[in-house]
Image 1: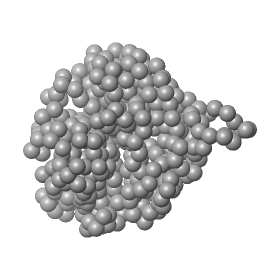
Image 2: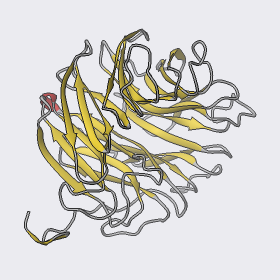
Image 3: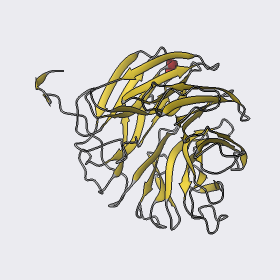
Length: 403
C-alpha cells in the first residue's frame, strides 16, 4: 500500500453501502441470514416504525427480507417494553428464525412480565409469523445471545439466566443452551455455570455435536480459570449432554463471541484475548487444532465467524487500528483463514465514525456466507453510508463482501 505519510494513504477507505436500516432514534444490529435463493434477512432492534409497520413501544424487534424473488418484506414485533434481537438463521424452506429477549409479553402468554425473557420466533418465507416462544425464570433476567438452525427446522439457542431453569443457579448469571422443536416447543434446556458471571454468546451445530461459546469470570465445570475474564467453548450432544469444555485466552480479559462448524468438521470460535482478535479451532474431541491472532496497536475483536468451502472461514469483527485502509473510529474488519488457520486475506471497511461496536465497547456485528460464496455482514454504525444518508443516532448496515 503506497502512503504519502503517516495516516495519509493514496487509497481511499472502503465505505459502507446505502441504505442503512433503522430510525431517527437508537437502533441496534441483531443478525443476518443468507438464503438459498440469494436473498438476505437482516434483524435489528428499532426505536420507531419501520417501512410502515406499527411501533409497539421503546425498542421493537424487526426483520427485513431483501433481494427475495417473491418480494421484499419487513415484520416488526414488539411490546410496550424493549425487544432486542441477537441472532437470525435461515431455514431450508425459505423461512427464518430469530432470537433475543423481551421485557414484555411478546408471545401473548406472559401477561404482566417486566423482566428479561428469552424468545425465539419463526417466520415463513413470506414473513408471516409461524410461532413465538417466550421462556425464562420468573422475576429473573434471561437473555439469548446466540442462535443456530437445527437440521429438522428447529433451533438451538444460547444465552444466560439469573434464575434456575435447569437446577440451582451456580452463581450470578449462568450460561444456558436450549433446543426448540420445529413447532416451537422447548425440548430441553441446560444451565452451565460456576461461581462467577457466565454468559453463552455463540452456538453452532452439525449432525452430531452442538458447540457453545462465551465468557466466564471464574472456572466453569470441566475447565481451568486462566485469569480475568475467560473465553470458553463447550461441546454437547444433540440431546443436551455436555461432552467437554475448554478455556481460551490468557491471563487478561478474554471472550469467545461466536462459533461455526467448518466443512471439515472443526469448531472455529472467534473473540478477543487481551485486546487482540483471537480465533481458535477445535476438533470434535476437544483438541485445539490451530489458533490465529489479529493484532494492531489498538483494540481488535472477532464478533462473527462463518464457514466457507474447503474448511475455510471468514471472521468478521472490529478494529481501531489499521489492517487495510482505515476509515475512522472503529472499523469493520474481515479476515479469511484457510483450513489450517493461515490468513489468506483481510479487509477493512467503515465510516468516519464507530462501526461494528457499541458504546459499551462490545461488538454489534453478524455475518453469514451467501449462496454465491460471498459474505453478508450486518452491524451497528454511527456514521453515514456511501451515496446515502443516515437515519441517525445509531443505525444498521448491510454489506456484502468477497469471502
